[in-house]
Length: 508
Image 1: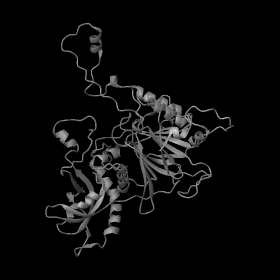
Image 2: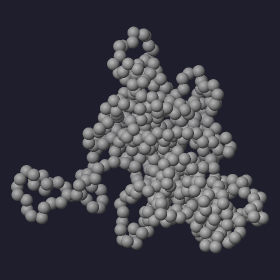
Image 3: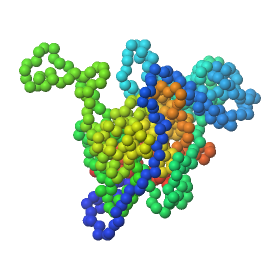
Image 4: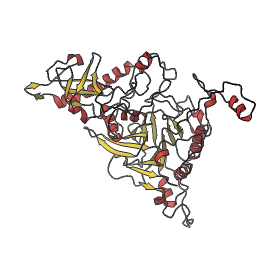
């Protein structure tokens, strides 16, 4: 970890350098966004959600079967050879077999919309529950397909992260209780990984090798910040936000550090740039007629909170204005990719669509003209999740909701392990639409990873973390947990030649 104090050495107040310096220019960003998670403007919501699971099973099942055949073909246990069965209902008691299906976690603490409807209770927003997992043994793991469902048991299940929606193959036997006793389990593993610069052409002067000697010029950097959480009230970390702005602009450091910061070619704001709105207190007028005092007149004029529909009186424009000002000061020198998060002004269901540029009067000048096929502007408001190519590397990023929801299913705090599991499941949001609100897709399932990213980051996380995972075919993925800036005052820099990660802490 590098602090600003370590970078500045003698502090912010330094004697001006007498050495003649050439003007610094920020390196150009080679950027190619993909519209993997874009939804049509006239999207309907009348269709059923079950089609998502069928599409996911259809897309991932062949890869799971391929790995299962390679691992289990010819397996003999107790004198019996394991055989493949096509459907869950084809499993027979006492026969050694393996089958592919979709995991379903039956958890009493997990919210259920069917129970809400049966109780005639409607909810207006996703329910916030810390954990679905319980330690009393009431949770159970199911495997299902279009034919039926069977309960999975066995100690081997404890060795894997399992959540609703992931596609797995299990080998074992059905016991006398009608449960499937699992001996081994297989996933699809990492999907095929595209070569670097598969979508665009590399600059002539740049080394395009994944490993080896870097280019003679300093490598570029990608800065990722998450959880700025601008709010309508006074922010306790305003000083750190100002220091972050000055750091990205290179205004607080010496000549050497400014030269290094000029290598930052792109800034990614990975969700929760706006703080969670505070709940408005219920307005209750007195039953008796108030006397004509200043206090009671103010009380009488205070508007009621609307129970249904949009309440314009509760809208607070200050957070978006502060974010707009922050970005407008950066945009003349650095391009920004803006992902929405849980609290940002975007749709709540996955995939979140881009925040409309009209929210940012000062910054929208740098955005692309709506309705045109021009290349993205310096302000690129994108979806969450988002996929694209930066400096030739395939990048997948989210605002954090997918990982936060998975954490509720398991008794573990290993968030990097859960990120790895998503890659090996080939699904970036397996719990959608069960507990993670999602659009009811009918023809495609965009959460299935068709190609393996080189860089996979998740924003709005409690703490920083990173590691590299490898696949059977030589795939290498850099996983990055981007911490919430409002809590940690930390940002992440990624080297675009080596994909090495540096954590920077901003301290006042």
